[in-house]
Amino acid sequence: MDAVTDETAPHGAEPADIDTDAAGADQADVGLTDAGLPDAGRAPTRLCIASRTVRPVDELLRFVVAPDGTVVPDIHARLPGRGAWVTARHAVLAEALKRKAFSRAFKGKGRAEPGLSDMVGQLLEKDALASLALAKKAGQVVTGNAKVIEALQSGKVAVLMHASEAAPDGAGKLDALARRIGEAAGREIARIDSLPGTQLDLALGRANVVHAALLAHPTSAGFLARMKRLEGWRAE
Image (cartoon, one colour):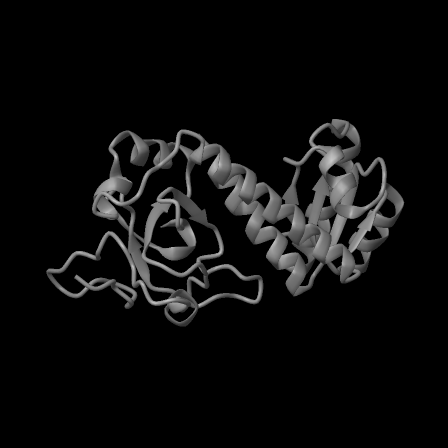
């Protein structure tokens, strides 16, 4: 049965476990945002091979079979070959592995290695940090308490970020300011506090990053989308 490319499956039909095998088909069939992530407004649904539920592709992760026969994650949904989809949660992938769902989806041709879940987590984290570095390169990131306050007061901040080990009082004061400014503008300023300072230092190319702000920009939106996916993956 061919992959479903509409928003919902035809009446009385169930989406296939796997999608089309045409190289590059996912870029044509699956709408991608400027951030390189699936666009829920244009994207089709797919069937999660673990939960057997139909979900928008932006809630799923795609997997393909590598030339050596192992199942590998395709976090940007761009690799050629037939793909199987799993809800982007660590626990759901664990269920897929327990049920040997990849073997069924790929008709016995896919071999899921024990470290697949760790690989997914590492790739999602690397992808998020790379998108943060891209936002910094585009000039959309400010760091340091004083500069973050100035950026918040300008009304241009889309994302407020704290290192995971940031002192609660310092983070709390910035959060309160962000809430007041967001409420006055009728919008919410996103908050990220799950990355340690060492990772922020590496991504932003400077030492001792504790607080940072990302200005409204496509690169900042790309980072936020990737962080939401990473945090969703880590959630129990």
